[in-house]
Image 1 (cartoon, rainbow, N blue to C red):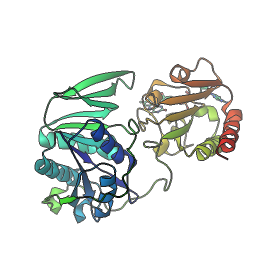
Image 2: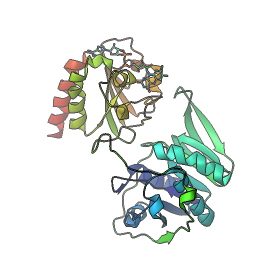
Image 3: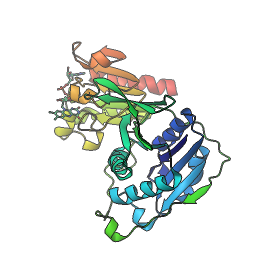
Length: 322
Ligand SMILES: Cc1cc2nc3c(=O)[nH]c(=O)nc-3n(C[C@H](O)[C@H](O)[C@H](O)COP(=O)(O)OP(=O)(O)OC[C@H]3O[C@@H](n4cnc5c(N)ncnc54)[C@H](O)[C@@H]3O)c2cc1C
């Protein structure tokens, strides 16, 4: 079985989610695993991919790929797929992955299972488990075309340990890119919240909702997140109220998250919020209302005032961490 993973680079480093794809390929017992590295001047990242399990790195390096565009990256994946002939192409279910994977599927006339939380091979087909109906149920789908395309949700599989001594065997992907091929051009990039952990990929998240009473109390969420090394998340109610930036919104119209730990402080657990976080491994809910729906999905629940409990939790975490 040949697996091609589409790697992503962010802030000058290979994203952890790309290493998770390599780990998934290994779990499928793939005989050949290649990683596709797309960008401009990105060859230096090839070794990292090799160290985490890529047998070879296909390099699509071009000045017109310096920034993500749907057309440019679709062309790169299509060309790589045509030369490598994989049985499976794995994408991260990131914002770019969710944009890119259906376009590539159409281009290759292949089938796509998006946002998978589990992936296996039944001897004949790839079988993916994916949330449906805003996370209320799971569908198991088998992908019956070659190549099969799957986008994998972040944090559903751990990256394998690095084999630090490895160096990559790199193969250039043949590209035929001209300005006419790209219908969009990135003129500049602005970082919304530079340096902060992105909720979509964080392994731990502390989220706050309207129960925090006002933006002036969000420092309590930030302090606990800081002590844990977690990202800060928010419900849509507080984002709409202008208390928090949209990039932190978790839910159906925000980001889908799947961390090991999700702390929901002062969040009721509306269906449209839970659609984005119910696949978290451990959910801790802090809410004054014992009947709040969030307690139905919580692993641990505290019927308590978040304004009192958050500082206590922060102190406790700091003590444990020394
Ligand atoms: C089309 C559409 C899309 C949507 N998409 C999203 C989405 O992506 N994400 C999202 O989050 N929402 C989304 N919503 C909104 C969603 O339906 C809810 O309105 C929203 O999630 C509620 O946010 P909340 O839990 O912060 O506020 P509330 O529902 O007001 O809940 C506040 C909670 O805080 C508790 N509380 C009060 N005081 C305290 C205290 N001192 N300590 C602890 N707890 C306290 C209360 O008991 C209550 O449970 C969407 C809505 C629509 C219509």
